[in-house]
Image (cartoon, rainbow, N blue to C red; front, side, top):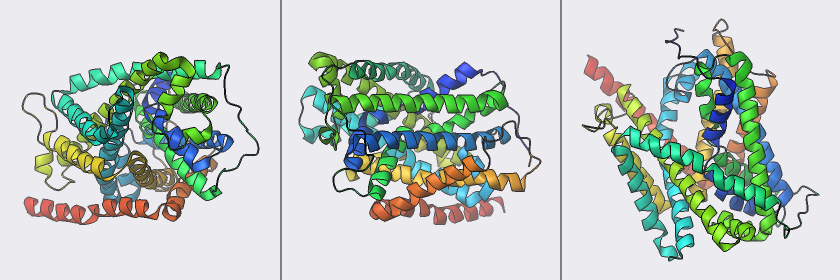
Length: 444
Protein backbone atom coordinates (compact mmCIF):
# COMPACT_ATOMS: atom_id res chain seq x y z
CA UNK A 1 0.00 0.00 0.00
CA UNK A 2 1.59 3.26 -1.12
CA UNK A 3 1.76 6.14 1.31
CA UNK A 4 1.59 9.80 0.44
CA UNK A 5 3.95 12.53 1.43
CA UNK A 6 4.35 12.90 5.19
CA UNK A 7 3.09 16.01 6.97
CA UNK A 8 5.55 18.34 8.63
CA UNK A 9 6.29 17.09 12.16
CA UNK A 10 6.29 20.22 14.31
CA UNK A 11 3.77 19.55 17.11
CA UNK A 12 5.07 18.98 20.64
CA UNK A 13 3.36 17.37 23.62
CA UNK A 14 1.87 20.57 25.08
CA UNK A 15 0.36 21.59 21.75
CA UNK A 16 -1.03 18.08 21.30
CA UNK A 17 -2.64 18.11 24.76
CA UNK A 18 -4.34 21.49 24.19
CA UNK A 19 -5.40 20.43 20.70
CA UNK A 20 -7.13 17.33 22.06
CA UNK A 21 -9.00 19.28 24.74
CA UNK A 22 -9.86 22.16 22.41
CA UNK A 23 -11.21 19.76 19.79
CA UNK A 24 -13.42 17.77 22.17
CA UNK A 25 -14.75 20.31 24.68
CA UNK A 26 -17.73 21.99 23.06
CA UNK A 27 -21.30 23.15 23.54
CA UNK A 28 -22.71 19.70 24.30
CA UNK A 29 -21.46 19.70 27.89
CA UNK A 30 -23.85 22.54 28.80
CA UNK A 31 -26.98 20.75 27.62
CA UNK A 32 -26.55 17.01 27.92
CA UNK A 33 -26.73 16.94 31.71
CA UNK A 34 -30.51 17.41 31.37
CA UNK A 35 -30.70 14.32 29.15
CA UNK A 36 -28.48 12.22 31.41
CA UNK A 37 -30.55 13.29 34.41
CA UNK A 38 -33.74 12.18 32.63
CA UNK A 39 -32.19 8.84 31.64
CA UNK A 40 -30.67 7.99 35.03
CA UNK A 41 -32.55 10.01 37.70
CA UNK A 42 -29.49 9.21 39.82
CA UNK A 43 -26.55 11.58 40.56
CA UNK A 44 -24.15 8.69 41.09
CA UNK A 45 -25.08 6.88 37.86
CA UNK A 46 -25.00 10.17 35.95
CA UNK A 47 -21.40 10.81 37.03
CA UNK A 48 -20.44 7.17 36.41
CA UNK A 49 -21.71 7.39 32.81
CA UNK A 50 -19.56 10.49 32.20
CA UNK A 51 -16.59 8.46 33.48
CA UNK A 52 -17.46 5.41 31.32
CA UNK A 53 -17.92 7.60 28.26
CA UNK A 54 -14.52 9.18 28.90
CA UNK A 55 -12.87 5.78 29.23
CA UNK A 56 -14.51 4.56 26.01
CA UNK A 57 -13.40 7.75 24.25
CA UNK A 58 -9.80 7.22 25.38
CA UNK A 59 -9.87 3.59 24.17
CA UNK A 60 -11.26 4.75 20.83
CA UNK A 61 -8.68 7.52 20.55
CA UNK A 62 -5.83 5.08 21.14
CA UNK A 63 -7.17 2.75 18.42
CA UNK A 64 -7.53 5.63 16.00
CA UNK A 65 -4.01 6.83 16.77
CA UNK A 66 -2.44 3.59 15.53
CA UNK A 67 -4.32 3.79 12.25
CA UNK A 68 -3.68 7.52 11.81
CA UNK A 69 0.08 7.18 12.29
CA UNK A 70 0.22 4.22 9.92
CA UNK A 71 -1.88 6.00 7.26
CA UNK A 72 -1.00 9.72 7.54
CA UNK A 73 -3.10 10.68 4.52
CA UNK A 74 -5.78 13.29 3.99
CA UNK A 75 -9.34 12.06 4.41
CA UNK A 76 -9.24 10.80 7.98
CA UNK A 77 -11.86 8.25 8.94
CA UNK A 78 -13.26 7.94 5.39
CA UNK A 79 -9.80 6.89 4.19
CA UNK A 80 -9.31 4.39 7.04
CA UNK A 81 -12.64 2.71 6.31
CA UNK A 82 -11.81 2.42 2.60
CA UNK A 83 -8.43 0.77 3.21
CA UNK A 84 -9.84 -1.68 5.77
CA UNK A 85 -13.29 -2.44 4.32
CA UNK A 86 -13.53 -1.15 0.75
CA UNK A 87 -14.99 1.73 -1.25
CA UNK A 88 -18.72 1.24 -0.51
CA UNK A 89 -18.46 1.39 3.33
CA UNK A 90 -16.10 4.35 2.91
CA UNK A 91 -18.63 6.12 0.70
CA UNK A 92 -21.43 5.41 3.18
CA UNK A 93 -19.43 7.07 5.96
CA UNK A 94 -18.90 10.16 3.81
CA UNK A 95 -22.58 10.05 2.81
CA UNK A 96 -23.67 9.79 6.46
CA UNK A 97 -21.42 12.71 7.38
CA UNK A 98 -22.90 14.87 4.61
CA UNK A 99 -26.53 13.82 5.12
CA UNK A 100 -26.70 13.22 8.89
CA UNK A 101 -23.66 14.09 10.99
CA UNK A 102 -22.93 17.69 10.03
CA UNK A 103 -26.50 18.88 9.27
CA UNK A 104 -27.82 17.24 12.46
CA UNK A 105 -25.11 18.93 14.53
CA UNK A 106 -25.89 22.29 12.93
CA UNK A 107 -29.65 21.81 13.43
CA UNK A 108 -29.42 20.50 17.01
CA UNK A 109 -27.03 23.22 18.19
CA UNK A 110 -29.05 25.93 16.39
CA UNK A 111 -32.14 24.74 18.29
CA UNK A 112 -30.31 24.79 21.61
CA UNK A 113 -28.77 28.21 20.83
CA UNK A 114 -32.24 29.57 20.09
CA UNK A 115 -33.66 28.02 23.27
CA UNK A 116 -30.94 29.63 25.43
CA UNK A 117 -31.21 33.02 23.73
CA UNK A 118 -34.99 33.11 24.08
CA UNK A 119 -34.72 32.15 27.75
CA UNK A 120 -32.10 34.84 28.34
CA UNK A 121 -34.15 37.57 26.66
CA UNK A 122 -37.54 36.39 27.94
CA UNK A 123 -39.02 35.93 24.47
CA UNK A 124 -41.84 33.56 23.49
CA UNK A 125 -40.92 29.90 23.07
CA UNK A 126 -42.74 30.03 19.73
CA UNK A 127 -39.70 31.81 18.34
CA UNK A 128 -37.33 28.85 18.81
CA UNK A 129 -37.54 27.61 15.21
CA UNK A 130 -37.26 31.07 13.57
CA UNK A 131 -34.26 31.98 15.73
CA UNK A 132 -32.66 28.57 15.06
CA UNK A 133 -33.11 29.11 11.31
CA UNK A 134 -31.58 32.59 11.50
CA UNK A 135 -28.63 31.12 13.42
CA UNK A 136 -27.96 28.37 10.84
CA UNK A 137 -28.41 30.73 7.88
CA UNK A 138 -26.18 33.41 9.41
CA UNK A 139 -23.27 31.02 9.89
CA UNK A 140 -23.55 29.56 6.39
CA UNK A 141 -23.54 33.13 5.06
CA UNK A 142 -20.55 33.99 7.24
CA UNK A 143 -18.56 31.05 5.89
CA UNK A 144 -19.50 31.86 2.30
CA UNK A 145 -17.69 35.17 2.82
CA UNK A 146 -14.45 33.23 3.14
CA UNK A 147 -12.55 30.64 5.17
CA UNK A 148 -10.50 33.33 6.93
CA UNK A 149 -13.58 34.89 8.54
CA UNK A 150 -14.93 31.49 9.60
CA UNK A 151 -11.56 30.60 11.13
CA UNK A 152 -11.43 33.89 13.03
CA UNK A 153 -14.83 33.18 14.60
CA UNK A 154 -13.63 29.68 15.48
CA UNK A 155 -10.45 30.90 17.19
CA UNK A 156 -12.27 33.53 19.27
CA UNK A 157 -15.00 31.17 20.46
CA UNK A 158 -12.42 28.47 21.26
CA UNK A 159 -11.00 30.73 23.97
CA UNK A 160 -14.34 32.08 25.19
CA UNK A 161 -15.99 28.66 25.61
CA UNK A 162 -13.62 27.69 28.43
CA UNK A 163 -14.57 30.72 30.57
CA UNK A 164 -18.15 29.69 31.58
CA UNK A 165 -16.97 26.11 32.19
CA UNK A 166 -14.26 27.20 34.65
CA UNK A 167 -16.54 29.72 36.39
CA UNK A 168 -19.31 27.15 36.93
CA UNK A 169 -16.84 24.54 38.23
CA UNK A 170 -15.00 26.85 40.66
CA UNK A 171 -18.00 28.65 42.13
CA UNK A 172 -20.31 25.62 41.89
CA UNK A 173 -18.04 23.36 43.92
CA UNK A 174 -17.49 26.11 46.51
CA UNK A 175 -21.21 26.89 46.79
CA UNK A 176 -22.10 26.87 50.54
CA UNK A 177 -25.78 26.17 49.76
CA UNK A 178 -24.93 23.07 47.70
CA UNK A 179 -27.43 20.21 47.36
CA UNK A 180 -26.70 17.02 49.29
CA UNK A 181 -25.86 14.23 46.85
CA UNK A 182 -26.53 10.57 47.55
CA UNK A 183 -23.70 8.71 45.79
CA UNK A 184 -24.47 5.17 46.92
CA UNK A 185 -25.89 2.81 45.76
CA UNK A 186 -25.09 3.42 42.09
CA UNK A 187 -28.31 2.52 40.33
CA UNK A 188 -30.92 4.16 38.09
CA UNK A 189 -33.64 6.09 39.86
CA UNK A 190 -37.30 6.43 39.00
CA UNK A 191 -38.62 3.66 36.77
CA UNK A 192 -35.62 3.37 34.43
CA UNK A 193 -33.98 0.03 33.72
CA UNK A 194 -30.19 -0.32 33.60
CA UNK A 195 -30.32 -0.84 29.80
CA UNK A 196 -32.43 2.26 29.17
CA UNK A 197 -30.40 4.39 31.58
CA UNK A 198 -27.03 3.31 30.19
CA UNK A 199 -28.08 3.61 26.55
CA UNK A 200 -29.73 7.02 26.93
CA UNK A 201 -26.91 8.24 29.13
CA UNK A 202 -24.11 7.07 26.82
CA UNK A 203 -25.78 8.49 23.71
CA UNK A 204 -26.01 11.85 25.48
CA UNK A 205 -22.49 11.75 26.91
CA UNK A 206 -20.86 10.67 23.64
CA UNK A 207 -22.30 13.74 21.93
CA UNK A 208 -20.47 15.91 24.46
CA UNK A 209 -17.24 13.99 23.70
CA UNK A 210 -17.83 14.39 19.97
CA UNK A 211 -14.68 15.50 18.19
CA UNK A 212 -12.43 12.82 19.69
CA UNK A 213 -12.19 11.11 16.31
CA UNK A 214 -10.25 14.12 15.02
CA UNK A 215 -7.41 13.62 17.50
CA UNK A 216 -5.83 10.97 15.31
CA UNK A 217 -5.44 13.51 12.51
CA UNK A 218 -2.63 15.27 14.38
CA UNK A 219 -0.52 12.10 14.52
CA UNK A 220 1.32 12.88 11.29
CA UNK A 221 2.29 16.34 12.60
CA UNK A 222 3.81 15.26 15.93
CA UNK A 223 7.58 15.24 16.41
CA UNK A 224 7.53 12.04 18.46
CA UNK A 225 4.17 10.25 17.99
CA UNK A 226 5.34 6.95 19.49
CA UNK A 227 6.13 8.64 22.81
CA UNK A 228 3.82 11.66 22.93
CA UNK A 229 0.64 10.54 21.14
CA UNK A 230 -0.62 8.12 23.83
CA UNK A 231 0.23 10.73 26.50
CA UNK A 232 -1.68 13.41 24.56
CA UNK A 233 -4.71 11.18 24.04
CA UNK A 234 -4.86 9.73 27.56
CA UNK A 235 -3.91 13.06 29.18
CA UNK A 236 -6.07 15.29 26.97
CA UNK A 237 -9.16 13.09 27.03
CA UNK A 238 -8.57 12.24 30.70
CA UNK A 239 -8.50 15.95 31.61
CA UNK A 240 -11.59 16.49 29.46
CA UNK A 241 -13.36 13.71 31.38
CA UNK A 242 -12.35 15.34 34.68
CA UNK A 243 -13.69 18.71 33.50
CA UNK A 244 -16.98 17.08 32.45
CA UNK A 245 -17.38 15.27 35.78
CA UNK A 246 -16.59 18.44 37.77
CA UNK A 247 -19.02 20.65 35.86
CA UNK A 248 -21.75 18.03 36.21
CA UNK A 249 -21.01 17.81 39.91
CA UNK A 250 -21.46 21.59 40.06
CA UNK A 251 -24.80 21.31 38.24
CA UNK A 252 -25.96 18.57 40.64
CA UNK A 253 -24.93 20.64 43.65
CA UNK A 254 -26.88 23.63 42.32
CA UNK A 255 -30.16 21.89 41.41
CA UNK A 256 -31.84 18.63 42.47
CA UNK A 257 -31.68 15.99 39.76
CA UNK A 258 -35.45 16.25 39.28
CA UNK A 259 -35.05 19.90 38.28
CA UNK A 260 -32.15 19.10 35.94
CA UNK A 261 -34.01 16.28 34.15
CA UNK A 262 -35.37 17.44 30.81
CA UNK A 263 -34.54 21.07 31.59
CA UNK A 264 -33.35 22.68 28.34
CA UNK A 265 -31.90 25.62 30.29
CA UNK A 266 -30.33 23.53 33.08
CA UNK A 267 -26.87 25.08 32.64
CA UNK A 268 -28.22 28.63 32.72
CA UNK A 269 -30.49 27.88 35.72
CA UNK A 270 -27.57 26.30 37.59
CA UNK A 271 -25.39 29.33 36.81
CA UNK A 272 -28.05 31.63 38.27
CA UNK A 273 -28.18 29.57 41.47
CA UNK A 274 -24.38 29.54 41.74
CA UNK A 275 -23.62 33.15 40.74
CA UNK A 276 -26.86 35.05 41.17
CA UNK A 277 -29.05 36.50 38.41
CA UNK A 278 -26.49 38.87 36.89
CA UNK A 279 -23.62 36.39 37.05
CA UNK A 280 -25.85 33.67 35.66
CA UNK A 281 -26.76 35.88 32.70
CA UNK A 282 -23.10 36.59 31.98
CA UNK A 283 -22.31 32.89 32.00
CA UNK A 284 -25.28 32.26 29.69
CA UNK A 285 -23.84 34.77 27.23
CA UNK A 286 -20.57 32.84 27.36
CA UNK A 287 -22.46 29.60 26.71
CA UNK A 288 -24.20 31.20 23.71
CA UNK A 289 -20.85 32.28 22.26
CA UNK A 290 -19.53 28.76 22.79
CA UNK A 291 -22.48 27.16 21.00
CA UNK A 292 -22.32 29.68 18.15
CA UNK A 293 -18.66 28.76 17.69
CA UNK A 294 -19.50 25.05 17.71
CA UNK A 295 -22.11 25.55 14.98
CA UNK A 296 -19.56 27.53 12.99
CA UNK A 297 -17.06 24.69 13.29
CA UNK A 298 -19.50 22.10 11.97
CA UNK A 299 -20.64 24.45 9.19
CA UNK A 300 -17.07 25.17 8.09
CA UNK A 301 -15.93 21.53 8.20
CA UNK A 302 -19.09 19.88 6.87
CA UNK A 303 -19.27 21.76 3.59
CA UNK A 304 -15.68 20.68 2.83
CA UNK A 305 -16.55 16.98 3.25
CA UNK A 306 -19.13 17.15 0.45
CA UNK A 307 -16.69 19.23 -1.61
CA UNK A 308 -13.94 16.62 -1.15
CA UNK A 309 -16.33 13.87 -2.28
CA UNK A 310 -17.05 15.97 -5.37
CA UNK A 311 -13.35 16.38 -6.10
CA UNK A 312 -12.91 12.59 -5.77
CA UNK A 313 -15.96 11.91 -8.00
CA UNK A 314 -17.56 9.77 -5.31
CA UNK A 315 -20.85 11.68 -4.87
CA UNK A 316 -23.71 12.15 -7.38
CA UNK A 317 -23.44 15.47 -9.26
CA UNK A 318 -19.77 15.56 -8.32
CA UNK A 319 -18.96 18.31 -10.84
CA UNK A 320 -21.48 20.57 -9.10
CA UNK A 321 -20.13 19.81 -5.62
CA UNK A 322 -16.65 20.77 -6.84
CA UNK A 323 -17.78 24.32 -7.62
CA UNK A 324 -16.73 27.14 -5.31
CA UNK A 325 -17.72 30.78 -4.95
CA UNK A 326 -15.94 33.03 -7.43
CA UNK A 327 -14.03 35.30 -5.05
CA UNK A 328 -13.79 33.48 -1.71
CA UNK A 329 -13.33 29.95 -3.15
CA UNK A 330 -15.75 28.40 -0.64
CA UNK A 331 -17.71 25.23 -1.64
CA UNK A 332 -21.03 26.61 -2.88
CA UNK A 333 -23.41 23.73 -3.58
CA UNK A 334 -21.98 21.76 -0.65
CA UNK A 335 -22.77 24.62 1.75
CA UNK A 336 -26.29 25.09 0.34
CA UNK A 337 -27.16 21.36 0.47
CA UNK A 338 -25.87 21.20 4.05
CA UNK A 339 -28.02 24.21 5.00
CA UNK A 340 -31.12 22.76 3.31
CA UNK A 341 -30.79 19.43 5.14
CA UNK A 342 -30.13 21.24 8.44
CA UNK A 343 -33.23 23.39 7.85
CA UNK A 344 -35.40 20.28 7.35
CA UNK A 345 -33.93 18.81 10.55
CA UNK A 346 -34.68 21.97 12.52
CA UNK A 347 -38.35 21.51 11.62
CA UNK A 348 -38.43 17.72 12.06
CA UNK A 349 -36.69 17.06 15.37
CA UNK A 350 -35.66 18.30 18.77
CA UNK A 351 -32.14 18.59 20.19
CA UNK A 352 -31.95 15.16 21.81
CA UNK A 353 -33.52 13.31 18.87
CA UNK A 354 -31.04 14.80 16.40
CA UNK A 355 -27.97 14.31 18.57
CA UNK A 356 -28.91 10.74 19.52
CA UNK A 357 -29.41 9.87 15.85
CA UNK A 358 -26.05 11.28 14.75
CA UNK A 359 -24.23 9.57 17.64
CA UNK A 360 -25.90 6.24 16.80
CA UNK A 361 -24.98 6.41 13.11
CA UNK A 362 -21.43 7.62 13.67
CA UNK A 363 -20.77 4.93 16.28
CA UNK A 364 -21.56 2.25 13.71
CA UNK A 365 -18.59 3.53 11.74
CA UNK A 366 -16.49 4.23 14.86
CA UNK A 367 -16.85 0.58 15.87
CA UNK A 368 -15.75 -0.44 12.38
CA UNK A 369 -12.65 1.75 12.79
CA UNK A 370 -11.79 0.01 16.07
CA UNK A 371 -12.07 -3.32 14.26
CA UNK A 372 -9.81 -1.96 11.53
CA UNK A 373 -6.89 -2.15 13.98
CA UNK A 374 -7.09 -5.97 13.74
CA UNK A 375 -7.84 -5.99 10.01
CA UNK A 376 -4.95 -3.72 9.04
CA UNK A 377 -2.46 -5.64 11.20
CA UNK A 378 -3.45 -8.79 9.33
CA UNK A 379 -3.66 -7.25 5.83
CA UNK A 380 -0.55 -5.05 6.11
CA UNK A 381 1.72 -6.57 8.75
CA UNK A 382 4.80 -4.75 7.36
CA UNK A 383 3.16 -1.31 7.31
CA UNK A 384 5.28 1.12 9.39
CA UNK A 385 3.43 1.92 12.61
CA UNK A 386 5.08 4.79 14.51
CA UNK A 387 2.56 4.14 17.29
CA UNK A 388 0.97 0.83 18.30
CA UNK A 389 -2.11 0.88 20.50
CA UNK A 390 -1.39 0.33 24.18
CA UNK A 391 -2.78 -2.86 25.72
CA UNK A 392 -3.35 -4.60 22.38
CA UNK A 393 -5.61 -6.53 21.88
CA UNK A 394 -7.60 -5.58 25.01
CA UNK A 395 -7.99 -1.84 24.39
CA UNK A 396 -9.36 -2.34 20.85
CA UNK A 397 -11.66 -5.09 22.15
CA UNK A 398 -12.97 -2.80 24.92
CA UNK A 399 -13.59 -0.06 22.33
CA UNK A 400 -15.43 -2.53 20.04
CA UNK A 401 -17.58 -3.86 22.92
CA UNK A 402 -18.43 -0.31 24.04
CA UNK A 403 -19.30 0.77 20.52
CA UNK A 404 -21.37 -2.36 19.90
CA UNK A 405 -23.29 -1.73 23.13
CA UNK A 406 -24.18 1.81 22.02
CA UNK A 407 -25.37 0.60 18.60
CA UNK A 408 -27.23 -2.57 19.65
CA UNK A 409 -28.88 -1.10 22.75
CA UNK A 410 -30.16 1.85 20.68
CA UNK A 411 -31.85 -0.63 18.33
CA UNK A 412 -33.73 -2.03 21.35
CA UNK A 413 -34.48 1.16 23.27
CA UNK A 414 -34.98 3.71 20.44
CA UNK A 415 -35.86 1.63 17.40
CA UNK A 416 -37.56 4.39 15.38
CA UNK A 417 -34.57 6.69 15.79
CA UNK A 418 -32.16 3.90 14.84
CA UNK A 419 -34.27 2.86 11.85
CA UNK A 420 -34.34 6.42 10.52
CA UNK A 421 -30.58 6.78 10.88
CA UNK A 422 -29.91 3.43 9.17
CA UNK A 423 -32.38 4.17 6.36
CA UNK A 424 -30.81 7.57 5.63
CA UNK A 425 -27.38 5.94 5.57
CA UNK A 426 -28.43 3.03 3.32
CA UNK A 427 -29.97 5.46 0.82
CA UNK A 428 -26.37 6.05 -0.13
CA UNK A 429 -26.05 2.56 -1.66
CA UNK A 430 -28.07 3.24 -4.87
CA UNK A 431 -26.43 6.66 -5.10
CA UNK A 432 -22.99 5.01 -4.91
CA UNK A 433 -23.69 2.54 -7.71
CA UNK A 434 -25.36 5.24 -9.84
CA UNK A 435 -22.30 7.45 -9.49
CA UNK A 436 -19.94 4.54 -10.24
CA UNK A 437 -21.83 3.75 -13.45
CA UNK A 438 -21.98 7.43 -14.41
CA UNK A 439 -18.23 7.79 -13.82
CA UNK A 440 -17.47 4.71 -15.96
CA UNK A 441 -19.66 6.02 -18.80
CA UNK A 442 -17.83 9.34 -18.75
CA UNK A 443 -14.46 7.60 -19.05
CA UNK A 444 -15.47 5.26 -21.92
